[in-house]
Image 1 (tube, one colour):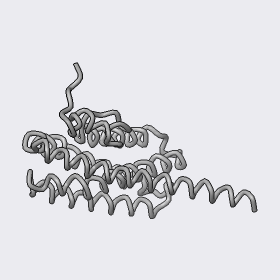
Image 2 (spheres, helix red, strand yellow; image 1 turned 90 degrees about the vertical axis):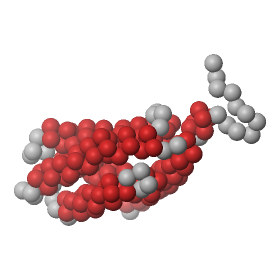
Image 3 (cartoon, rainbow, N blue to C red; image 1 turned 45 degrees about the vertical axis):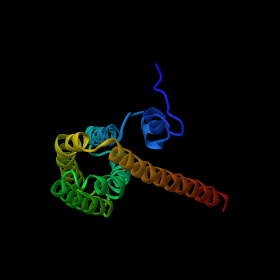
Length: 190
């Protein structure tokens, strides 16, 4: 039986369907979305570890994808999630910001070296460990606390903020992809 809508008010189900991040990731709520992003990055780290250490180009491509996914994820969390969860556990949210700074610094260090550099693999391993620690705290502490403490209105505000940030990042990524494709066509024409 479908939930009924009162006049002028969409049902909870219809409200969630309007969020791009929920439909893109085929999830029910913001926490499932964030956890699914965590799983994607974990799989990429596993792919990196399983790639032959002499396959520098393959490892570089995998790392580039890891960096892109982590960058998008940290932007969403810092601009949309953490401001809405600060009242749930301010200390843990502030710690999460610091952990993000570590991840961003490691990404920059790795991007500054060649995939054939002897420290490339070690740096990616340290990045993986930092991400694993951060994910564990979010999934075992921050997310459960948030699920139990946020009311429907606060959850709606969180999902709206995440959707706005997600949509903005999707448009930026699509725009960059179009520019790159256009740039490579121009280069081939000359």
